[in-house]
Image (tube, rainbow, N blue to C red; front, side):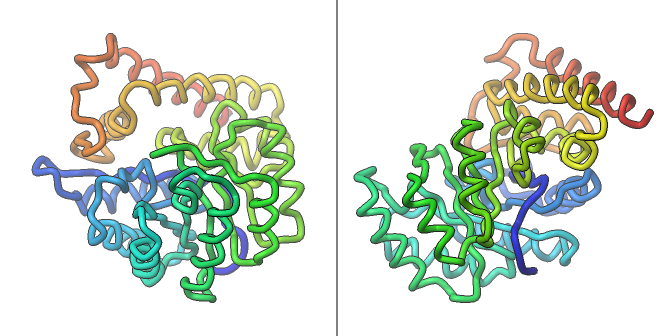
Length: 308
């Protein structure tokens, strides 16, 4: 597939079985759930996928499996960019580029691992672009782990000018900066996709080309409705956006386990195990089952309103 990667893009979870291995049957069911619920593309092997806790073999197989199951129905992008040294990054990115994905997503903090500034970033940027396949569309992800590294305006402009990048997952969480980037990217192949649920609807309404946040693991269909129909139904869109913004606060309840808990309740996956979260969220957070009940009820209320 060619062109920008945009729209409603879930950051995919990785289901594990009781032995702690990737559950491929649940993975297939989850991919089909994302597609059936209106996703425009999928972001595999990202932080929500627990990529820092996956071996390189698991990261590669997860990307290949996602490409296989989607079978060209929607684009698949993947990262798995976690290594420290430049040579290790060359290796992990080149093997990921060979999985059939539609874009290879680089993590911004890996291009400046010492957080020393733009000189180091530009040096690594130039080196990576020379090393990676010239016909491989690229993306950037301002992943907050191990540290948030936002692109400067000059770095962003360099990204646009390269002509190599099709998507940026913007983690600035700032409406002004997000929309300035959207304007700066005009005329380039780059789609600047917001990651923050609190500004998801204002950003879509203002012309941002999509949403790639954690709550797409609950309700990609509701975000798709906002994207496609929200401007025609402004009052309902305002109510829904307020609900979705508050729903995103569940990230503080042991994400990604809480999202897996939700999907388990729906019957999409069987287990809520995580390599990133080792504690029992029911013991740490009070009334977690009631919170989940209210989340599910609220989602169904808005789905009913939309169907009317």
